[in-house]
Image (tube, rainbow, N blue to C red; front, side, top):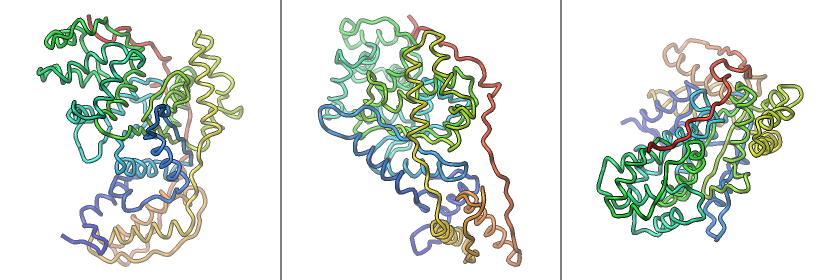
Length: 427
């Protein structure tokens, strides 16, 4: 196996380059290139420290928002933060906001977080792996079990009931159904009660089916405690491309702002200790969507909720909009030294990947618009080496097109949100 002096093998380097060519840095690329956003990195490390505070009153969920232009490294930063959090013993989920995962629908965001969840040292499906990690004899599980069965946790009885069945029943099919329920799926109440009957606990957990609209925040709280009950320090959810909210209808945008307030731990009566939510948004979002020069959401979004009698959600939406306007940490533009150091690292990676000595490229300072962004610099360098390796006498020049975010309301997302069915389980 060909290996360079830093121990990187050719296949690993090729995988890193492939992700960078596609503009989606993978774990290997992030590990090799590192991160030049020291302020964001320091703030994130502080959140990790706060999340594992061991006093009697742990903090609610913790939030962080970073902004930057397209191509300035927001997705790369999230991947770097994910890599760091995993190394520190946290479970991580990277969720890209999309039409399939609309921010105003907490149930879909939660399911996506479960589907894309990663655990240190394990590669299986998140909830299955967490279920296997639960150890009834551990202190972490004991604390989790006691919390789940307390009267002050705010959960529907179906959650501690399913936990009891999961712990004691020998029915593998039912255990699988319970883990699916913990992942946000529906479960039949008779199935849970049959499980309770099998372990002689039916009278301990009397309940009727919960309402589906009440379950998403309870799923999030239960899953966060489950993560800690399995022995991990907490749960980090990384929300990429929050700016897609700008393509929603005004009601959907208002509900999205309210959900961000919940996720960032800014709702006084809802706590998610151990949860950290980091989001990215384009730098012009506040002006184009919230401000008077754009869609004027800071004037109309909360009022749209109040017109429907949703005063609590309206207040949360106002908090979410203030956070988006005032609390975003703007990514630091890369210096010429940062760019040159990154390009040199890429040259070494490319050399190892293809067993050649990639030539140094002429250092180019700055650049205007997209040409000054790290994404452009990285892809332009890789493209040049790809061509020079095959055509040594070539003199390649890279041309690009400026990407400008569009916030026109999408027909596919334009329908007003509808309440889901009332029942979270079948009688």
